[in-house]
Length: 290
Image (cartoon, one colour):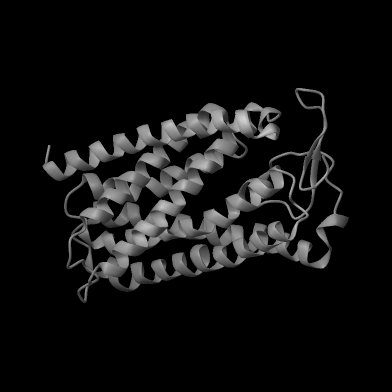
């Protein structure tokens, strides 16, 4: 095994161990200090802890990848001229996160877990190929940029946490709700479409001699771009328009708290309440009621 591949594998395994420890710590700390967490179903608890991990992952990856991209120099073919060690380490770090979160999705069967299993596999495959198959340097530029889509995860998860903690009618929630829409447009619409453009304009025409590097990455890139744009158009935009047209305090049509497509990919624009919990007490999501 080549030293670079061995290092990438070691970093991936260490990353998986780290995310396991963070997931367990998040679960125990939430059970101790977050009262509403104790009333969650197993799937909801898994989703909560998964979001904690995804928020940490997003912060580290966005800061790390943005730093490496800005410090990197590129030739006319968009090949890196400086060391790629730091970025490659972040690729392994991110792959470890996706692989562990795959386990969480299947084990806890969080809402829409099948959809996100496909999402995680599609997201991880190009990075696994790059890190464990030599000669895929032409993918480095786009792989570095694609990880920046994680920027939208940060306000999205904060919005969801605020709803689940009962702050869905507050100005802070409204700020993060609309911020997520803006960040999603920039990080998950503009950026993926730019990457697809570069893929067809610069990468594919010059990479016919490396099909194993280009074809899987191209297919996965198109699927991720389609997913991100589709969520923005068909999920986020209707939700934002609904919230814009009617104050959130007036939208009480949802009687039960249930994680669905809208509450998983993007939080509901309305308050959520739930009864029939394990403890028999009433829970409130998206409200300030006790």
